[in-house]
Image 1: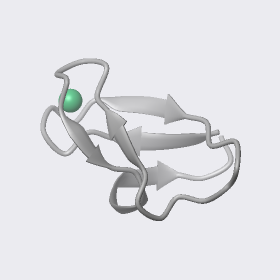
Image 2: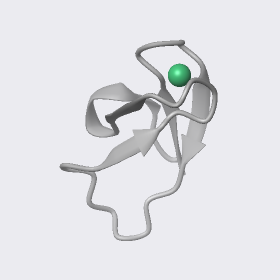
Image 3: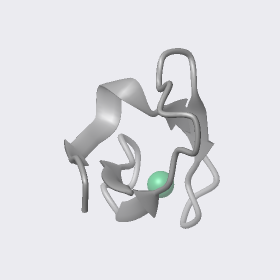
Length: 47
Ligand SMILES: [Zn+2]
C-alpha cells in the first residue's frame, strides 16, 4: 500500500497496487472525483 495525495483537493488516500507497476496507472480521488496519475502523486511508499 502507498499513500497518494490528490493534486486537486489535497486529500490523502491509500492505494494498493497488486502488480507493483505504477507507470501509467491512474487513481480516481474518492473525495472530489478527479482522476490523477499515481506515479506523480505518491506521498509515502509501503504504508
Ligand atoms: Zn481530490
